[in-house]
Length: 374
Image 1 (tube, one colour):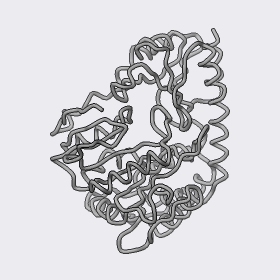
Image 2 (tube, helix red, strand yellow; image 1 turned 135 degrees about the vertical axis):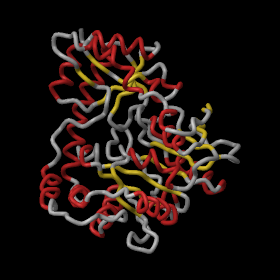
Image 3 (cartoon, helix red, strand yellow; image 1 turned 120 degrees about the horizontal axis):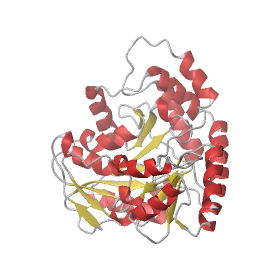
């Protein structure tokens, strides 16, 4: 496990934005006569399903302010989706302490969750060894320290929050029921909230991901637990900024109260689109099949080119290594006109891998496959 010192204070103390360092690789890749194949950022490129588009348009007349709590319809749809798709039964979504609320996508929630839970100024946030950078950013914004570890720390005296990410970004690793349950027991014993980022939970390939809120993991209630979900990937709706926070009603209420004061409100038309998305499984299955076809083609091409793929049993990425420094691999790919994300973006433990996204068009995936074949 590794620890990082806090960078408390103003925004200028935040780390450099990592994607800026890819500029030289992008310039080199742009020289390829067939154009750039950008597999670096996991932004959806396929059309947003019509069921969302129509719901958004129908709710376009929205003169009043939305509420941070969300409409009854969006909370009902969210509870139904969690039960139907993930086997999770929430406490009363309409109680005095809500068990689910909508969020403006998931990134802003991740970035501000320690602050909204009132954890600012002192303590340590646990994040995975290889992790989405915004977990660390959220700790920095709150003036907290960061501890990178994939196992519950023995010394938890200073820990105030623990992040899990399954399926993981960038590496697609899925935590087993036993691993999840171990974190749940540890968090409850230590009095530390455990938060699972499950934004890729609908995209299991070799295994079926389990929510931390599932009764096989959490037991009969969700004490001390939160789960984060997003429509960005499963519904190809990243531009809508629709997400969910669910779990322990006492913790959800703390976040809801902070969001009320801060004015962090999901627009009413977006909430209507969320209802449509969370009530319809067909578009999710269609998009999953589309990603699965791209994954099969890119996986075969990467392996045929002599690289190895680790983890990647779920999610939207291939975690690729040639057993060399990640920037050497980035340079090799840029020479083929392909851009990937250096594993070092996600922590020191990722320094010999690159992340290749499946979020490119069929034509661009085919171009990458051809180039990897030489």
